[in-house]
Image (cartoon, rainbow, N blue to C red; front, side, top):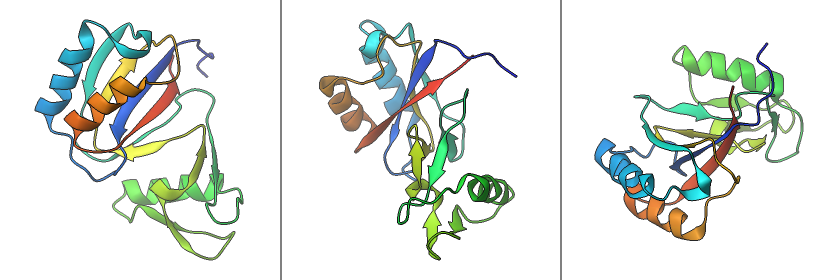
Length: 153
């Protein structure tokens, strides 16, 4: 098992999990941030996995709760992720409230997000993105963004 790390990356991704991230726009953001990286990042890079992926903490896990009842959905989420990766829907039938929820609408702690890609600020000093950097990301990535912290090895 990997050991906990003090390294924190921030993934800046579109708030809409299905919004495409044009490579040219992501590269323009990287170019803008390379000289003076936000959050004290040691490096800035484009991340385009080619499909919707989950951006989340990589060490130490996370909690997943029903957005309606707050019930624990960790097990159901794991099974829903497996089914989705095998071609199923990006949703789960919630045993806590009886509704179906899109996986992106679940309550994650720490926060997680589904996205088609974004820009990663590697090895940051702070866990937040300043307002000016957020606005710049929203302009270049075409709309609201989410900033997801993830501990990495």
